[in-house]
Image 1 (tube, rainbow, N blue to C red):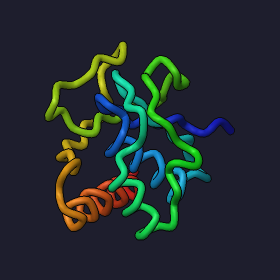
Image 2 (image 1 turned 90 degrees about the vertical axis):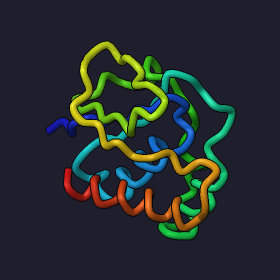
Image 3 (image 1 turned 45 degrees about the vertical axis):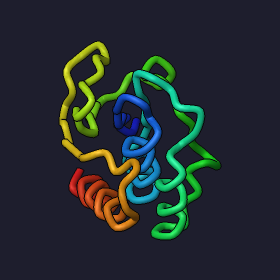
Amino acid sequence: MNKKKIAFICVHNSCRSQIAEALGKHLAGDRFEFYSAGTEKKPQINGDAVRIMKQLYGIDMEKTQYSKTVDEIPAPDIAISMGCDVGCPYIGRAFDANWGLADPTGKSDAYFVQVIEEIAQKIKDL
């Protein structure tokens, strides 16, 4: 049986979508294939996201993930926007869901943890 492909999309593919990809693989990788992408690339994943994900889940996002654009991943069965606070990218079709998550970049560790836990809960609900 083919697993459904779920893609988490945001503009820079450096923080929320990367966290969602890592948590998806960690929490439900046996049921779905997870990807993340953006409309622009960043040279590296958000350092705070990397550090806090290591602390909370023991996941090293830099080992298996990098910033990529939508055309570099397989066509998803389910496309989820992380939140359009900077304008939603167009991916060739409508999004299946918009999680409306605030970008934690530049905010406190506690705020990062809150966003990470919110993403984890939404993945468990899939």
